[in-house]
Length: 352
Length: 258
Ligand SMILES: Nc1ncnc2c1ncn2[C@@H]1O[C@H](COP(=O)(O)OP(=O)(O)OP(=O)(O)O)[C@@H](O)[C@H]1O
Ligand SMILES: [Mg+2]
Image 1 (cartoon, each protein chain N blue to C red):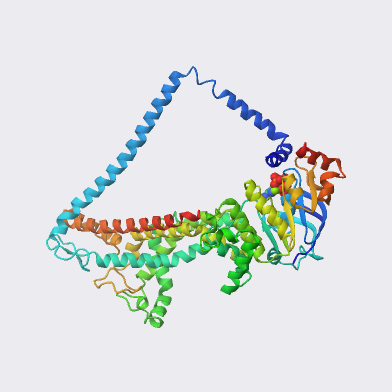
Image 2 (tube, rainbow over the protein chains, first blue to last red; image 1 turned 30 degrees about the vertical axis):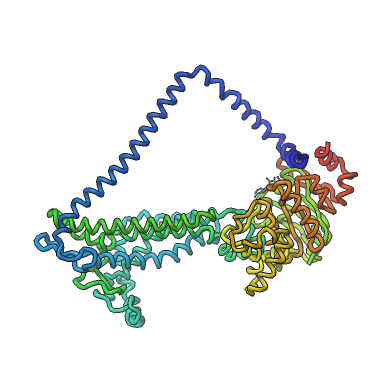
């Protein structure tokens, strides 16, 4: 027991100057706290009323959210059911899309494949680049440079997607033209670089669109990764440093394992964003009558860009309903991606 | 193994703040040296400067010499990473790597040094865990995460991690302050055994602990808030606790025992 007291003593001795004054004020606050409470029946009632009002408001807001989401869901389903009933093709497995109300013959598969393929391609580019940027900003860059650089990356998120689309079409597509053709000619035996259904040279391809998407994902993935890497607990960092770890080894043994769940969920967040991206893809991708053939040099449409492109047809409820059905598939997809992200993070909880 | 340390006129700074002033101190090999003194006098700062952990804090710097068997670890030619590989450190709060298994925690230092041979790693893990008096408790769950152990076990795991690389010196910053009396005793016993092989420097706020485990005690103090900490005196532990040569030391120590 005397061990304990001897452990405390020095602390009190050393802080006896200023901090002791702080202790007194604390005591005074404690002493004062009970005084207002006795004559405060009305105040207590007030408190209870306030509580009730706030609880009611919070519950109301919650219920309203649920009802709103349910209402949207039901509305969309009601819209989608009639055209699905009249559909001559298999909605999930057909690759043609014909939403002519007189001859409904639409399947979502081709759109779905283009959506997933372009998003995954974007993610494959954006994940390592974001990781590199986040590690550089948190671990390597001098602190004075890190702040403006991080701000610059964040700024990428503020650029409207229509600007990305124009940039992709007018700047990136011509700039990548030579490279695309080279890839196609030299690595064409790999399916994703094989001849596509639009011109690789002109570049209104999934290749260019995916790279634009990747740039759009960078700020999302980088921002979250930066946060989690920055929050690596100092004791773990110092533990690794004290064992004689080099900078990179410290990152490998502590920063990366600690940040992995955050990084993965950030990537999933980015994937969700990529799946739903509309305008940039609408501008960049060239439409085609051919099916998607697993090449980066294919054109086509994603679910979202297809819907946007068809907005003129929406005056007919049946045609609109077909697109609503496609939208529901997109919604289900992003929902699954988000759930997967959550599951991954939850699976790593034990390390936090 | 077990090298001696000679600290010569060491001044330590955090940015423009002069934290520790002119420490000169010899730490003999196979010997336990305790640092005692009031909070804020710079014990941790000095300890961390002995394996160049001090400079890890942004803006922190050191002036003066720390000789490890005569070689200055602060000379320009020395790589701080290699210094830390030969001078192990145990922190106040146990900090096993949470994503690594118990075994991987113990051999983390060897892995960093490039040892890949599984059999060798297993041997070292067992030897270090035995050395840290933890083997019996964890031998059936070496593959489980190190974060799943009790605080005292985690601290012994950290000691095992530090001794697995067979360092020349072992630095400990209040290794028992987060532990219960039984774990504390276990670690004190361990220090008694480890000093056969290692040079040990330990920071403690616990006078009895300093008296029990150390051969030599260094008392640090500071003149006032904002002033740098200073080494007041260093002597055999018995002498410091029975007949210190300065009034300040006597006051500090009698404050504990009074
Ligand atoms: N990271 C830091 N940045 C700036 N100043 C620091 C830092 N760490 C410690 N100091 C200052 O250096 C001085 C010595 O601190 P140090 O931690 O070495 O004291 P200590 O003797 O170990 O105290 P304790 O017994 O409370 O652990 C103190 O004035 C402290 O405020
Ligand atoms: Mg300390």
